[in-house]
Length: 468
Image (cartoon, rainbow, N blue to C red):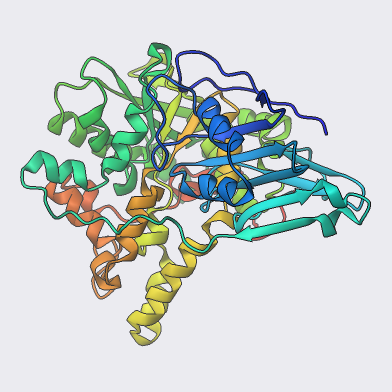
């Protein structure tokens, strides 16, 4: 067994070396955050606290401890006495873990080479490799302890909140607070940024972050746009002449609009709207040099487009009113998970319009949550971590997911209403009450289209095609 770890210091007063080894010889590699579920003393590293708990547990206790953690994580834990190696990812797959194995060897990593043998570790449970059976085919020595439920806690509602501030705080609540306050023991990493298209998901997160980030701290709004090729025919040339610049893409326009709303609603906050403009040459260079490896084992055209957009946005290098700016934030709030739970995708509208069946929509939303671990969050974690930053997903907080799962589907998305109103109607209503009038009715636009990366190179490819 060979263990190796790199540490991004986010919590605790001192850096905790990884791999972390206890006096009993047990070894832990931990890539995660304990936002809730376990009691972690103030100023103590998650890794140290978790290793102490695991040290005293049997196999049943180990599984119980890990299933209690609320927050994003992936881990590898070697229990020396029992000769067992445990590993896995949280239910939603918010942290990357990939594997490559044959009958003689097993490799686990956060990132990997572009080799066809690597795959994402399923988020279906906690895996255990029994080294007592190592003389057998290695794959026959691995078992998976499946998740039976997301958490054991009761479903939370907004009852019991009375003042406007309490209502604002409760509506995710609490989720944003955990993700902007849990790293306060380190002054160097207190800054927060938002991956910011100006859409409703990220704008609500930015507005709620204002409640919890200290008033004297700036919040960066990271808005990415890709250079558009100039058109050639007469009609298109006339269109080009009307453009202010080749970076005035849909997400830049909605981003500026939502930025103005935030300034109006939170005038005491210094908001930095960072315009991140990416030339085609830089896109192609960084994709081949770095991004394609980080995206792997995801490998479609869609994976490539989203990964490139997120990589450049999270790097945080851009302009603020023609002045160069590099974001120093190491906590990035991301809006992933809202569309899956609140019916934000066009396929949800398509299912409803087919025969008006609310049950079919509800089943689709349930399936979206169940399969989210197998889709893209591991990829996004690899991409963002490459800059020494950490992605945090408030919409995928365990309590938020439980609360939304308890609601009737028509309260979350009313697909009888027009596009830009019916989808995610619960979130739109909350945004409107919080004062976000324009963002509340902004239509859904995927990042690959809003940033215009999908059209930057004018390639005629389908999103599901393998990316060359």
